[in-house]
Length: 501
Image: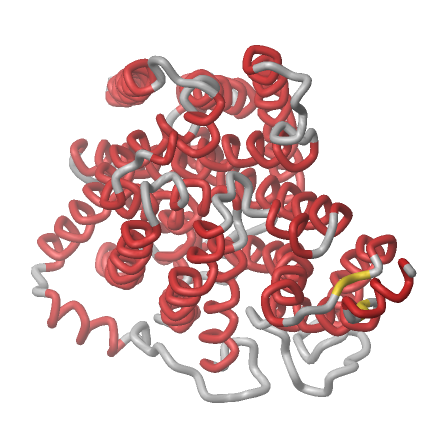
């Protein structure tokens, strides 16, 4: 009976999203889809971005990391916080000054068409993999704890969810998403706060008492000081800062919402407000993780502490295992769904925007009228939905454990060349020999992959780096190698003038 009610609640939630989409997408055009007609309210974007940044990956995986890593993840969050200041005061002024719709068109203006296409392609690859990893994780949880009991398969669930996302984004795009993200962030945070409050009540702890109990179990250590280890605090903080610069500042999905705000000052207010809220919310997720393990210990869930336990499963086990009041299960489920959609819908919209503008050249295609471009945009939107579905099925085949580390590793490989291209453009005055740009941008991640396979981590057959283990600074290493290789194929603008003579 409860499973039936859960399905009704899920369907009602979907209906609410479709209602918001219908209302906000009235009189929308291509500019509404791509940048919301630059009329979004900064405080709406700031609040909605919380859901986009955290996603279902954070909702499920971050609490689980506390068992083996304590609050180690918060080192990365501190880095995120620092990175948002660089985005707000270096990148946003650039995007507003150039009045960009796609942020990658900066590379076209500064370095040339091949660099532009290469940067956009790396974004499309990275965002597709990242978004579908997040999407897969949430669908897996829904299947395991709700839909499987009703005989609804993983494949049917995946198709239904992607069809829904397609329905409520294909008309309004960003104009719709800034409002649906706000709704979803509200429900996600509500689910988080209710679950934390319930466990504190069940354990009869105040927050200081819960912190003391977590400390006794070794769950509250934040900083790690061994430079050769992957969790060394400097690696984590610097890695987090560069991850933010790349995954937010150089990401069309995140910047598409920011540049939909009317002016630069409001967009910067949005970014700074958001980054402070993000610190508190991530700390709350980690507190939840510690509480979940304290609760598991109190009720005798011995399997949680056995070797091979999947830490991604701790939160769903608690909320969907049948041992908590139904309202807690509902709050978890709504929070989980709310964490799913902001990352998936924004990614689908941003990928459509980037492909249409950067690859198909909508802004340059003067021969196409508004209606022709709208039809093309819809075809691209549907095509990316199909690609998303294929990726979700692929991750189902290869999934072997926690996915938060996988997400950061994917970002490290794919955003490095993009970060290097923007760095060349912003920090230097040099031009690039464009035919070699794609080769360099492919070579750098391959070199990084080989280095990571032969670092000092357990299982490396031959170590090239002694005891040094590559952690979240993988992105920095990749960007650094890309930058050096790009500088090797660069030349001063004077040389271009001489060549033309």
